[in-house]
Image (cartoon, rainbow, N blue to C red; front, side, top):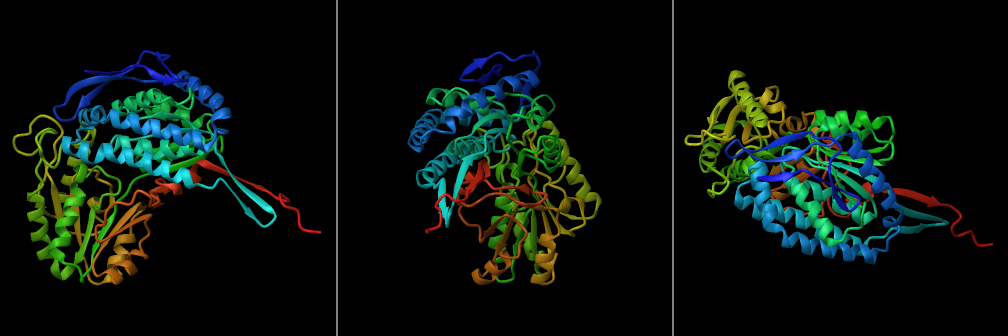
Amino acid sequence: MREALRFYIDGAWVEPAGNRRLDVVNPADAGICGHVALGEAADVERAVAAARRAFASWSQSLVARRLALFDAVIAEFRRRSADLEAAVTEEMGAPAWLASAAQVPLGIAHLQVAREALADFSFARQEGPTRIQLEPIGVCAFITPWNWPISLILSKVAPALAMGCTLILKPSEVAPFTGQIIAEICDAAGVPAGVFNLVQGDGVGVGSALSAHPDIDMVSFTGSTRAGIEVARAAAGTVKRVHQELGGKSANIILPSADLRAAVAAGVDAMMANSGQSCNAPSRMLVPAGRMAEAVEAARAAALEQTVGTPGSGARLGPVASETQFRKIQDLIEAGIAEGATLVAGGPGRPEGLEQGYYVKPTVFADAHNGMTIAREEIFGPVLTILGYSDVEEAVAIANDTPYGLAAYVQGELSEARSVASRMRAGHVYVNYPDIDMNAPFGGFKQSGNGREWGAHAFTEFAEIRAIMGYEPAAA
């Protein structure tokens, strides 16, 4: 039984101001696996005060000191990798193989990429007579979700620390244990008191207080578009910077020049990863209408290869993270059937033999159109929708016909795929299922948010720009 009942504030583990607690449920069996304390406004006040005090010195720290701290954090992170793998499996159901192959390594990668970027980063430059300086924005609040908890925490923490900001982290109350371990890592690595603070809690008790606090200079939120709007509203009164990475309904255009069967199979595989719980998942597959039957056959075969089981079973898919998610996904699968899409694989209910826990059948719909609920709403589960198109122009139009714009995928002959990729209204475009590039700026267009994360591109999100004119007077 894990207990996350204290907060990390000003370099010490402290008791919460209140006594509210929440049961943490293991989605693999729906049993209680621990408890988390739920903070309130008084806890936020204490953490913000600590971060504000620490900012005065940390913002002026030398790059060499920050690099040394990154080295210490990375070393401690590696030492705690097994603990993080176990925690992410227990709190959100990540299969053990995925925890060790992706969930934890992505966290390390964010730290390493930020460390490398910091070593070469220029905080000032001369433009004619004017000196342009990048200064840390100040005290940052981070509100992070449960689906990739380690990666999404460190994609914010790493660049903020590199820039010289101080921060308060509120992890998801659904998956609080990895955030607790990250705080322990920062403490063991010697992060100065007040630079990193952790307050556990929910959106009402902690998230709203962080977003509205006048002494917080920036709030960075990853989660649903609905919740992101509420964060922005709360932040508006103090005119703080709001950075958001929100929902997605990413299109995967399979061009006529692609190897259709291979591209469909790979698209199913990419969609089902992490049980479909990725904001950039390729959830709308667009195929030539005249080859829909062939695409359906390939998708059905690929879906049948997606094994579902308990996190330690070796199955490719584990459970979805919570009962709330499970019920939402089931409702949307039923909506797809009711609206007339063809059910190719999967469907409602749990897979056979998995009656306990929040397991979802890998589900594929075909013969859909872009007005259907399953083509409009972010399902956030292992559900793929296949749509047909008459020509490439229509494919591009369908792909861009969404309020979201986080990611897009294009498969086919390289020159044509590049041309189509440049027309996607999305922040991340993947051509022919490439390897991930941790230095590529990550973020979205439209209602998928604003700002960018990952690599050196993230540094400027945590910076203010000062221009000193007359820094070099004109020659007489």
